Length: 230
Figure (tube, rainbow, N blue to C red):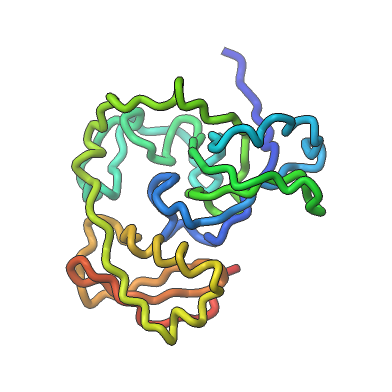
């Protein structure tokens, strides 16, 4: 077949400057806010006509930090401990023949008059800042929602959220509009599933802050905040 050339239509603006800590699926932390910014040639208001009638959108995007030559028919998902291999097409691993991702986000609104607009304000995104956006499609419940669907091995890796101990003096240093999102991200347990050392200190970059934390059992304790990557 003829090779297919895809051109990004825009990029994501989010609070994640690195992959560690990004929710493993979209919609897990609804308090996360982000923007989809289009390239100048696609900033035509007519291209968004009618989009505000939809509550959710599909974002089709590129795993831009997972490009590699060749591919493997099996991968080792971190959420399965990093030791068990499953077929690449049975996972949402970024290491695929074509590094394309799919995320369902809630549409918060269209920023018609923004200097870089029209841009989309969205919630619940699981994308790195700068991620190339390849396409945008509306989420249509009657066709896209399948309550009877089976979860495969994903069902056995879901677990309860962590209880987050965020000392008030540290939480006060987080911008007010970012606090719920950051707490939600931490509650999802950013660690690889196979790491359980209660003494290990982890670092997560979020919204220009470097968050240091430790996890013991089902409790995550925030230890310190510093300036992180922006």
